[in-house]
Length: 299
Image (cartoon, rainbow, N blue to C red; front, side, top):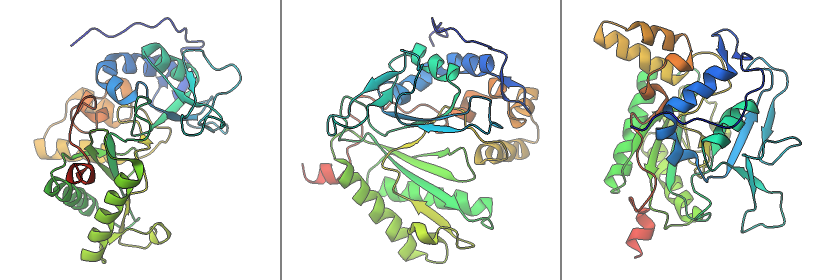
């Protein structure tokens, strides 16, 4: 593995607390990103981004969700026009580690990415199925749902990876060769969600307006590949699925390493790579992978 990269971007007030309860500073976050940049880059570079900026950390009353540039934005955060909508406001992307450090400097504590790169805007390279459990759904049911989605994707000859989402649910991601268009990928994801809901209506919902019904898991297929970045931080405190996974691993092993104790407390610098690389390892997103089934079947 290559050495952590250096950056020419300066951090002002590097000791500013972004997660005050955990003692995580601006510098802590930048150092963590340097340590995992080798894994992050294929998922982050040259993709349209949307950002949640919290200038005073996660307890900030100032919260800016930004898809476009802002006054004083660092030049390493690039503006790029959507080729299908050149007249609209330009979107955001980064091209290197300096761009990521510029996001840290800008207090971008959540990085949401498109499931495509700016080399092929109209052909996604991933499908994301987001499992959103109701308040009274037990964790084991969420795991079972993720495994069922994974099995259904694999039955269609797609690779599938389960990852935590930053919330209390799970994501199931299928990498794609960038051949099928957004509409085709969405139709495929919709049909999968509808089939699960039809087969087990007491467990699953595929309609957003019913997502809060008790005892059900909403299968959100409308992500269109736009998701919280896999190896990134999130701008929310509290228990999430990743912590539940860590707790279950510790329970099964009967022991927990001190660094895992720090991880459970929420310090990104102390967490293992596996906590943030939510598929367990970085699946390569470049090159010809598995085509969307419709594109393959029509070939």
